[in-house]
Structures are given as structure tokens and as C-alpha cells.
Image (cartoon, rainbow, N blue to C red; front, side, top):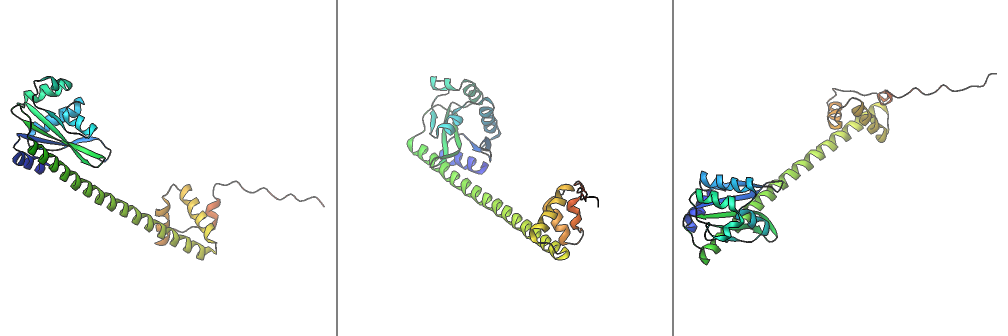
Length: 228
């Protein structure tokens, strides 16, 4: 993202570029800036909840302010003042959007007032679109890898639990449902993770007896027999 910001400065002929992108929780974060000054200005937008980048992100549409001393900048007075103190006189924001999904916005800063020409604006939006596609693809790959890892762990847990059930059933001549009940009851009473307990059974570091499942339960009442 920092590389993209620096390249946009060269390609678009602007003076600074900042990128705000959502994190996994949907919150905007500063993900790239062509300079430290620009990064601080983007952080100022987030901290004060005002600025063209936020308007652009929420609306999904480009926002242009050709003169930060003009009336349009009155919608973001604190941001406009801070941008002027940083030496900027114009700003444009372009949504990072794929169809209906908006994941951020790209800010272009200029030291002199003036509108971006149509060609520059079109190229800026194209750069934002390309970056969006790349980020979404990377996120999809990462989420797929996480899901695959979770499924793999779940399958491993299921396998080791089935192995432990089989060992208990064979060792103590128990049906599989009773073997699982014994395993689960012992895990609960000993405050152990079920998979960890099953793994210790498989590696023969733990052994269970059918009576273990009765620990802590009240003794059955004595059978009443009539006097002879």
C-alpha cells in the first residue's frame, strides 16, 4: 500500500497520496501514505471522524474539493484547517470499490488549488479499482486458507476421538455410544479438552475405566426386601 501511494504520486502528478482501508472488523485504518505528513493527516481524519476520505468511503462516490479555503471545505472544518497547515490546498478522494463492496478510499493531495482534469481523475479511479481487486483477492485467499486449516483441525479432532472411542470400546467391551459418553464425562469432570483427552488415550498416557463415568454420582438406593 505504501508503494502504491508513492507510485500514484508519480503517475498522477499530485503532491501526496494516502490510503484508508478497512480491517477484518470493517474499521478504517491507514494502510499507506506517500509521506509521514500524509499519514498523520489521514490519522487526523479518522480521529476526528471528518474529511473527504470518510465521505467517499461511506457514499462509495468520489469527492473533490478544489480549494480547501473555499465553502466546500466547511463540511470538514478541522480537517481542512489541518490540511492547510500541512501546506495542501486541494484534495480528491476516490472509493476503493468492487461493485457494491467498498473497502476504503484513496486521497490525493495538491499543494495548489484546482480541479483534477478528467484524465487524471479517471486514472486515479482505475488505480483505486486495481488495488481493490488485489486486496480482495488476497483476503479471499487468506480466508480460504484459514477455513481449510480450521476444517483440517476439526477432522483431526474427529479422527482422534473416534480412535479413542474404539480403544475404549474394545478394551472394556463397550458399545461406541457408551465409550463416547465415558470419554466425554471424564473430560468434563477433569476439566480437560475432549480432543486432548482422546489424544492421551490414543498415545496410551491415559486410561479410563467404565466406573470413571460414575464418579461424583450418588450411590443407588439399596433394594427394599420384605421381611420374611
